[in-house]
Amino acid sequence: MAFSDPNPIKDLQEELTCPICLDNFNEPVSIECGHSFCRPCIVRTWRGIHSNFPCPQCRKTSKWKFLRPNRLVENMVEITNRLLVAKINDVYGKTCKKHQEPVKLYCHDDDQEICLVCRESVFHKTHNVIPLEEATRDFKGHLKEKLQSLKREVDNIVQSKSDEQQKSQNLQCLVGQKRRVLASEFECLRQLLADHERDLNDRLEKMEKTIIQRRNESITRFNEKLAALQKSIADIEKNGLSPSCQKHQPKQELKSTVSRPSHEPQFTNCSVSSTLERLKMYTVSVTLDQKTANPNLFVSGNRKLVRYEEYPRDVIPYPERFDTKPCVLGITGYKIGKRYWEVEVGGGIYWSVGVAKQSVCRKGFFKIDPHGGIWAIGLLGMYADCYYAFTNPDILLYPREHPVRIGVLLNCEEHYISFYNADTMELLHTFASVQSADKLFPFFCVGAMGTEVRLD
Image 1 (cartoon, one colour):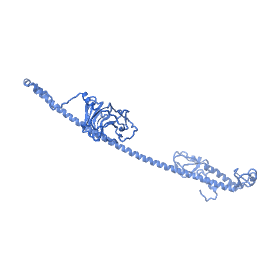
Image 2 (tube, one colour):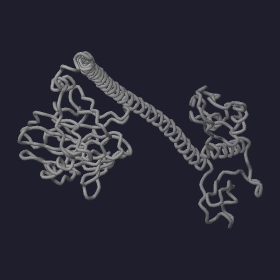
Image 3 (cartoon, one colour):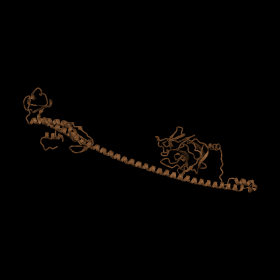
Image 4 (tube, one colour):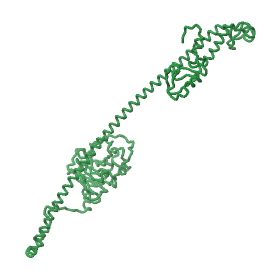
């Protein structure tokens, strides 16, 4: 506002003039930058604009059409008009219409300008009446206060706008930080998956080499056996079937000729019932330790069944709990004597059964093998129902029948553990040199939906 003009009413009138129509404000409204305009003027100016609305005065743009009614400016326009009328009347010598006397007084009670005769009338005699000049001065002061209040409101709006912009920038920075953290975490997960994929490929490659080696060994044995049988057939045809030899060759020589080669391996068979009866002497009751169960494993109330579930449970993070691999231990460990128990594996597609040291790793990823303190066999159904003894490298097993129940014999005295098909008593595999300063606990790993193991 310019204060060089000695006429304050004129200065005030200029301040209360719409920058668009250059007339007094009509329905004044404020926009986002703080400037005020007539509502019809700003609406007409912004017609056809749907975003980035420019201020006609400062050219600052805003994303939204924000029109706030400015009641203070509207009141100030009305008051200024009244002052202007009063000023004009004062210049032209306003007179009282009733008494035709100069108007020199102002009645506060009736809000009316009066003359000296009106002051002495019964209508104004008891009212609060002051000279018109004083009323004008008081009104100017009140108007100035109102104007300052309006400016403070504008300053508050500008400050609130600045605070909101700062808050928005802070939130954008926070979102950027969260995005970077998320990208870093996913990068770690991708690296972890890549390492896991590489480990599985290495294991499959070792398995393939083992299969090829076993196939070559079997072919060699069969070739040797076939050569021996062909030699025996040739000897029989030469010595036993020729007419000249049949008359003179003793019967004992013919028997020795048709006998099997001495280097063929001999097997000692024992009945299933006798083997099972012998193992049953060392039977122990195994129950599961819920404190060691992975969150994805469900352990029944009697602690005789464990099943893999898709979603992890909310469990207490005990130090002895397996947090990554879906494993669980028996509640009792053994260090002396012989122990035998049976595990029903049913139709599962991914399970491991065996024993583990008390100090076995339980956090993070680890391999199931004797080097890590675990002696176990298992089924990887995802690889066409392949049974393995988990060593380094893993040994592919060839059971005559798919076992439904696994018998586990732990001999702590002679330091070995053997696994049987509990229904046929076929020996599946034996780990020798099973030695540990810790106790050995029954070990179970159940790692696929629909897979569960059950204890007797």
